[in-house]
Image 1: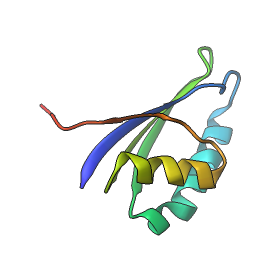
Image 2: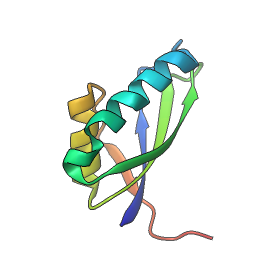
Image 3: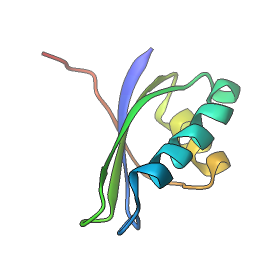
Length: 82
């Protein structure tokens, strides 16, 4: 499985509890696309969320986020790791 990092905008002022709820929404539907969301990070001041996942494709990651209610088109495959 490939690894992906995606970025969401529009999360200014979001709390850790709200981030956890958004992450849970991803986990609830990730199996439909063969994706697994490993972790999410929040910068509430910048309004950005970063999600690390594994899955079959960038498009599958995007579909999970769409179904969970927080779509993004900014998804990067991470083919090199050190």
